[in-house]
Length: 309
Image (cartoon, rainbow, N blue to C red):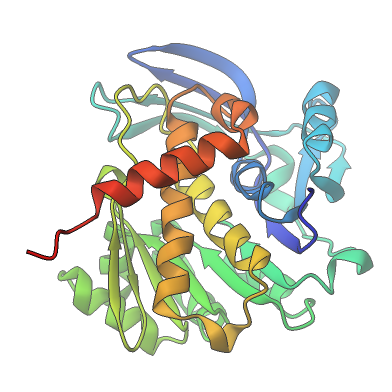
């Protein structure tokens, strides 16, 4: 049965050139909006907002649509598509950017189609916080989550804080959480994020899992174990996509973000992102099937089981 609940995803649509110890891929389909949308599609109906240039391969747009992602919000304008090239350290933990060519993404002005405005869930991937706020004000009361990066924290802090006051969930990695709050201790940093507005703070710790904080609780979620990490690109966006997609599936209102629900959402995020890192680009997400998701979820639950004695 196809998911019925709609989820709007705003972010980059890119052509990625990635090199790891396991190989290299040139100009593969990528971008935060793509990873997030593909990760959410088993839980919700993704509706993607982004921009590509006239050089963007038609086969990639066709592929995205065939997975069930609505692309009415993807603009195609004259110019070159966003490109990123990077090389990962041997352990896969550090990405060294070799080239970034923003192309048409540098002038990106998100257009929210009328058919998207009533969606119940919105995820704002890593883009300029002014653009994130623009989209937030055009949605009709959606449960909202967002991401950011160190550049926006340092260069557009005031605009980012404005977004945070309206967001329900904020996703950050551990370094970004420390940078934004000025707190080295992650528990204090998560608490500091909540004081900025969100109802829940999700701190991503890469291969060490994630931490979910609300006013009343802390929850920790380990990653699903993966023996071979071929390409870490998009893992964080996949995690967020599945996380928010799960909340969409459950029709969760902003005032019903209970610790248990957030813990379940995080578990699905860990499972889905494990498919991402096992293949180059979006290959793992494209081959992912629902029975495999449930199988890995069972494995993850066994990993965190504590005996009563």
